[in-house]
Amino acid sequence: TVTRDVTRSVLGEQALRESEELFRRIFDESPIPTVLSDTKGRFAKVNDAYCDLLGYTREDLLSMNDARFVHPAEAAPAREGRRRIFSGELSRIHREKRFRTADGRELVGMLTAAPIHDESGNVVYLLSIIEDITEQKRAAEELSRIADMKSDFVTLVSHELRAPLTNMRGGLELIAHDTKDLPESARRTLSIVSHETSRLNRFVETILDVSRLDAGQLPIVLGPVAVNVVIDRATRGAGLNPGNVDPAITCAPDLPLAWADELQLEHVFRNLIRNANHHSPAGQRIRIEAAAAPDRIIITVTDHGIGISREDLPHVFEAFRRTRDSELKYKGYGLGLYFAKRLIEAQGGDIQATSPITGDPLSPGARFTVRLPLAPQRA
Image 1 (cartoon, one colour):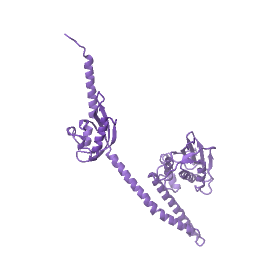
Image 2 (cartoon, rainbow, N blue to C red):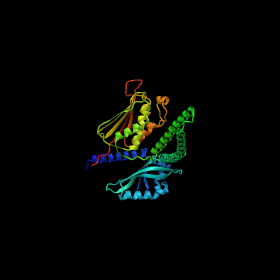
Image 3 (cartoon, rainbow, N blue to C red):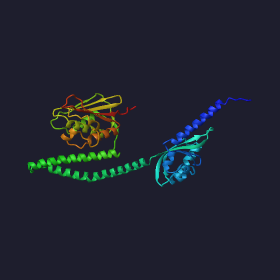
Image 4 (tube, one colour):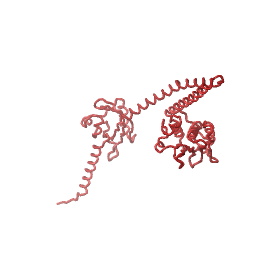
C-alpha cells in the first residue's frame, strides 16, 4: 500500500476552481459590455451586457466574428488594431468604434481593449469592453450645430444692428451739435434719445463680445501689464456719477506686473468701478486696492452700497441675473458681471464677490476681488 499526501494539490485545484468561478461571475454579471476574442476576431466569450447592447443572443455572437455587426468603415481599422495588439506593437486600444445592432440601428461605442497572455507570455485573447456613447455623440453634434447657429446669429446681429445704431448715433450727434433753435422740450427729448441709444449700443456691443468670447472668437492677448496704470485709466473712463466722491485708490509700492490682456482688463475694472459707483450712496467713496501675493496680484473694488443678499450672492455672476434691489433702482441687463468673470477666467485669473462687508444694515456694501497671475520673470 502506497499513501501520498495530496492535500496541497487538492487545495490548489479547489482554489483554481474558485478563482475561475469568480472570474466567470465577474465577467458574466458585469454591467459593462465585455467580450473575449481570439486572433481571428472570433468570440470566445461574451457577457449579457454585450448581448443586450447589440441585440443578439450569446449563441449568435459566438458563431460569428465582429465583421457582422461592426460598421463597414470600421472593418479595416479593427483588423489593423487586432494585428498590432497580437504582434505586441500596442499594449491597449482606446478609440471610438461604430456598430450595427441586430435591428439595423447604428451606435457609437468607446472601445477599450487589452491583450490576455498565456503562461509563456504569448497573446492568446483580446479582452474588450464597450461603452455606449451614442447619445453623448448626438448631444455633442447638436451642441456643435447650436454653436454654428450662434456664430451665424452673432454675424447677423453685428451687421443688422450695429450699422443702424451707428447711423442713429451719428444723426443724433449731428442734431445735438446745434440745438439753439430747438425748444427746451425738444432738447430734453433729444438728450433722452441720445442717452438711450448709447445704452442700446453698449448692450449690443456687450452681447456681441459675450457671444464672441463664448465661441472662442474674442482675442485675448496676454502680456505683462502694469495694474496701477490700468486701474487709473479705468477709473477715468468709468463715467462716474456727477457729485460722487472720486474713488480712493491704493496700490502697493513696487507692485509687480500682472500677466493679462491690458485692454480686456481695463474693460473689467471699468465695469466693476462703474457698478460700485452706481450702488454707492451719495458722498460715499468707493475703494480700489491692489497688492501682491506670492503668486498673484489681488485687486479689490469695495463699496458701501445696498450690498448683495444671501440669496442672490451665489448667482451674481450668472448671465442676465440681476439682484432684486438692483432691478428696482438701477438700469442694466445683467451681463456686466458675467462678462467680467468670463474675461478674468480667460486671462488665467478668478473673481469673487463678498457681501456684506459692514455691519450697517442700511449700507452693508459689497467687495469684488480679482486675482491675476504674475507676469513671468525674465532671466
